[in-house]
Image 1 (cartoon, rainbow, N blue to C red):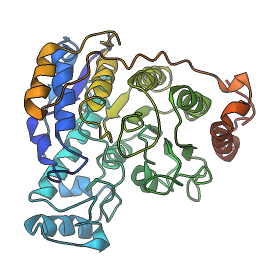
Image 2: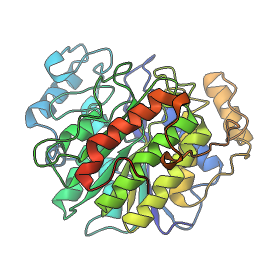
Image 3: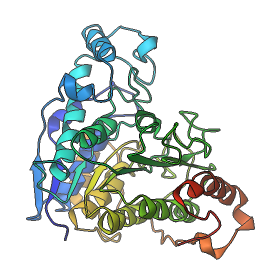
Length: 398
């Protein structure tokens, strides 16, 4: 069992709501938390639950501009606002009443998670804000369902409070562009993003050659995967890049974003992972936190748009990993949760905590795979672009 773990949540998180029909429906997070509770994952004596206040303007301005904060506040008072200069009032980021407060609350929760693991008031080994992970927001604009970038603010707070090496690993199907951009010129932050190739998916960035700005070359790492990549290929790419760079960088703190929209049922993307493949990645990231960051691990949610079959199970597995109560994949989904989903959404939920897959990690050292040429070329491009900058040989494995 993990030592003391902070779980940040309260029902007010559901206020981050772009309205009916929007893919980022708060019900997906509500169902994940409910499933975790029904599985007993939050009942351990090592788990402390915390709530959060809104992030202050000073905290938000660790990443965002004062002008942007004012634009968000103005828009929230007039939901018909269209402010394309700040990315507000678009199809992805429609304005809704109370938008500033709702978004600032998510950031506040992520700051609580970060402060629980790092800083003068740290009291936990791991922390998780499953409602966080809004990784697309830029300094002065909304983007991709994200108003404020809670992850970037949390990392910036850690840097302002003594952190010298922070590793950020983003396994959302979309490029973690907002977090990468926030630290593009900062060699103290290593950002690694595994995502579907920008040739076929929003936001159209995240090529292997995007390696960081002047003075920080090699600290932005992008693995752009071909559509259709499943468990075996995705895990091959992950294990060919992430552990080596984390070992080289030796972070004091590991921050991870766990968008589960890489699943084969996700309606907005084109990768083909199972819940079982995603669970395997959670386990490895947990181990990396202990091996290289003294166990300091802050985890966030992120994307994921199959609200019943995927998000609740994936994130229940994540919560179980973080709190040290791994869920056996053969576990039946609790009947009470299934009944609630049927009553709430009129849908029949999944029966078990597995998709029936047994992912195998095919190591990079096994050699080039001519049957998966696109995947191996993508991985080789990333290794060639950044490994030499970390003193690593792109042709060798650990």
